[in-house]
Length: 212
Image (cartoon, rainbow, N blue to C red; front, top):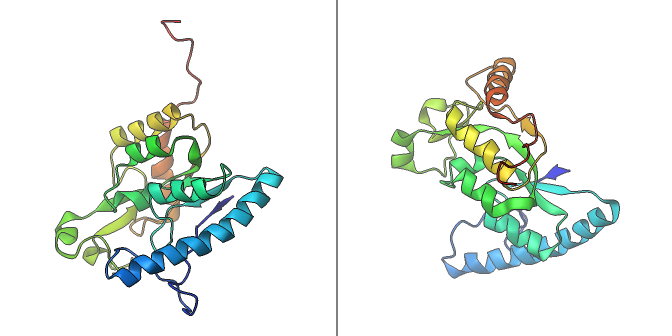
C-alpha cells in the first residue's frame, strides 16, 4: 500500500502542519523532535497492524512530509518494523540534489514499490532562487524544476543505471509510471515513458554466472 508519512504540527497546541527544514532557531529542532514522537506512535500502531495482515506499507518520500528523503525513511523503518518501506519515487529526490542510484543502494530491501517519474532542474532559476520553489507548477518558465516524463529530465543511460541498481538490491517489482508532466498530455507522456523503459528494463532473470 503506497502512502505518505504525514506531517504533524510543530507542537500539541498547533493546528497546521509544519515542515522543518533547518534546526535553528532551536524552537524548530524542538518541533522536529515532537513531530517524530507523534509520528512514531502513529506508525508503530499502523506497522503492527500491517504485519498482522501481511501488508507492506510503501511510503513516498515527498516534500512537506516528515519523511522526504532516504535517511528519514530508514529512521521511521527503524522505529517501526520491516513492513514499513519506500515507495521509491525518484522525482522528489532529484531536485533535492540526492543521487538516485546511491539512494537505491542505501535503501536496499526497504524499497517496496517504485514510481517511474522524472524531474528536470533548471539551473538558471535554481542558481538564483534555490530549489525550495513555491512557484505554481503551471508557471513553468519561472520554476527551478519541473516534474517530467521519464527521459525528459535524465537520459536513457541514467535510467539504465536506475533499473540496474534496483536489480542489484533485489527489487523485482513494478515500475509504475506516474504522469505529472505539465508540458505533455497524459497519453503522450505515458507513451514516451513506456518507449524508454521498454529499452532499459530487464525482462528475464540473469542466467548462471560464468564463474559458477
